Length: 457
Image (cartoon, rainbow, N blue to C red):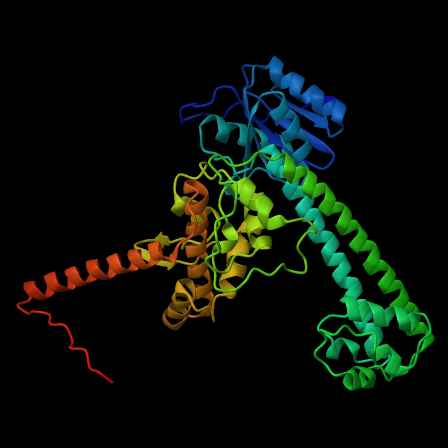
């Protein structure tokens, strides 16, 4: 149901030229949405609508009657998603803007003046749309985020099981790498079935368990109290329930990823792996062949890059998409991820050069990959250690993540396989330019540089 609102901007003088005359501004709320259109389009240019689907359809109909073609709105929680999807379906150009880019001017304390301010900023071209991947990618990353939430819930039940074992003084989770593996689940099921013979319980271990059977049997000696066994039973049931939910999400993810088209020019078979280590499937990967699906969609094997696993590559692709043409170059892509220094200068003095904080899963993924490269015996590992010695640990992680982001952008834009020779060649060219610069400076000062003779040790 639409409700007319009293406008508060009748005397506002507009000094800037209007670049988008058919622009509207929307202030999103959980129960009510305020919309402002240009004053010459309707007798009541500001109206409020409820958030029911029928009211959202009426809102869009009113915007069409007012000859609005582009709409700007804030990214408020998840409340903007229904209206955004309806506007996009009806053919509007939607600008999803960062709330920090709007709230810098004080004095607007009502929803009416807020939506009018958004409409004004959008009409004069002062708002920039946030990046949003295509709809088919949004479907998959919504499922992937839901999968992450379920995995976190399953992890809580694992902690409950460990707590119950500790309260009974059963040190099973200290002698096994994980209590949710084949051996751990078999022992837990036997304990809950009433088995108390530690020797028989230790025999349930898989042959891959490194701890001796005597150590496992010793860890199972404890006080089997009924209240802790009850907690252990319920936690195990809850863990298996969430594992079933994860399996169902994996099936839906596989179907959705099959619907995505193959990348243009992608080879039929994956090129040979250049990493020294053999690819090992992580325990939290989906049940289907995620690595092959990512190669089919992206047209390049991102997991061949040091520090990027299948989970990391999937996170980046499902947050950005395989098409990175929206970013003008690799520097813009790294800046969007918050991996570039944001220099703030006032009065000729540099206030800060820190990188800005970005709450984005695609920004977290290369940082996690950079953490794994400290001991890597490759170019990126040497770069990470060199940056750590020069800048420190946090800055080294950011610098390495920045280089990973540029590599990912290059692979997705050119569809070329990863090769360290390109990076080594780039470093060699930088060293040659530095040498030429030093020789020129030395010549200007009347000196001549001489290479240090190599000594045979």
